[in-house]
Length: 140
Image (cartoon, rainbow, N blue to C red; front, side, top):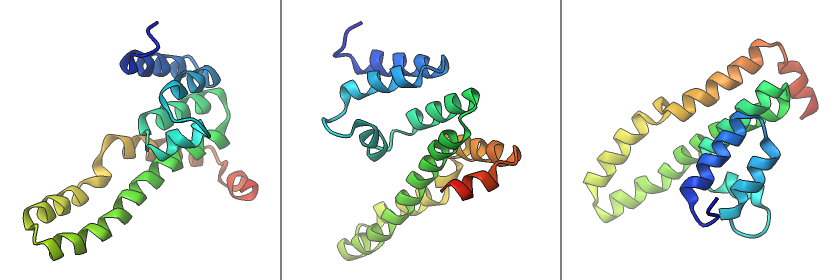
C-alpha cells in the first residue's frame, strides 16, 4: 500500500472500521494527521465520516458508551457550525456581502438535513432505545 496516498488510506480505514478493527483503523488514519494527540486531531478536523464509522463499529461490538460518544461528537460539530454562523452575520452586514449572507442563510436552513447528522441522530436514538440512557448519564 502506498502510504502517501490519502484516498487509499481513507478507503482502507473505512474497510477496517467495517471489519470492527477500530484500533488498527485509528493507527492507519493518523498517518495523515499532525503530530501530537492524533485522536483529538481527527475530532478537531471534524472528520465526521470517521466518527460515524467508528461509532457504528463500537455499536456492533457492544461498546455502547464509546459509540454514543462518537455519535454525539458529530452532533457537536453541527452545533459548532451553527455557532460559527453568528460571527458571519455581523461580518457580512459590515462588509455588505449580501449575496454570501443569503447563501449562508440558505445553508443554515438545511444544515440539519445532511446525511451525517441523520446517521448520528439515528445512532444515538438506537442507543436510547436499548434503555442505556441511565447508564450514560451516571457514568459521565
